[in-house]
Length: 156
Image (cartoon, rainbow, N blue to C red; front, side, top):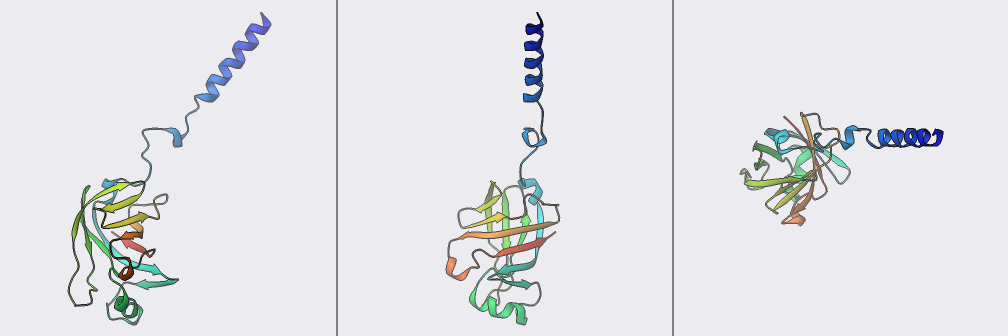
């Protein structure tokens, strides 16, 4: 009888240990950033590219001008973001115009995929606070003229 009680106590303990609920295991806790988290406008703060940080300011400022002469999307912002559409915005276009194409996007595994034209990895997904978004440009259709691997910091 003692062996049976001991066996049942061990089994009961194993059941309790195996059913311990951890926050990481809770299927009701979303992982990463959702499209609802992105809704709104995100304004350019800085771009870290090739070990240099370029800050918001005039397109002709000494900090941005040299990079802007070689690359596009130097001062990227995200405008009119909904849960399924996004407008990329850059007012530092070589011809003096404004770049603002709109895309349908998919957010999966913390990557924003803009119709397979541009892809941005959300670098701060684990520490996202709702006010600052860090995006790494990981895929463009025309890589030689875009700062691939650059990390944009954007604020609401």
